[in-house]
Image (cartoon, rainbow, N blue to C red; front, side, top):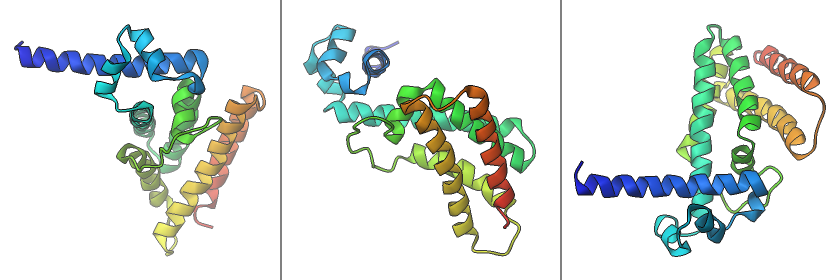
Length: 199
């Protein structure tokens, strides 16, 4: 390996370490505790070195948000590919979305601003659009009526998202109910929305 490649790899490793340290701090202390100085302490670098990679804390948050959407997209795509029927695919995809929210709680909170004061992360990330497209493609396949398809797809996607994100938020912010009841609500809601797609 040449010196250029070695330097590039070291830069990539340092960048990953910064992001990993940020997520570690958040998992231990919450999003409000995150600071450039704490990240520097965790990776045992000086704060100015971190600023060589990210101009401010918002830059770190945006990159973590992007990575969250990449992980979410991969989980949704994997769930979709395990099923054959369109309705079964949609159900599996929303369950994967639900599971991601609790497996990657801190990332989900950042991505969707749940129970945290979030900086302006309203920039449209292609990774966020990718997950929406995965859902919309399957919803579109279920539509059989001659309607304004784009409007119906959008309406049904936001119906799914509103209910599932709402249930997730309730459980992240305050303990909603037990897992068995949550699963019954989740599956019942998904099946009910699927049943209304051609109403």
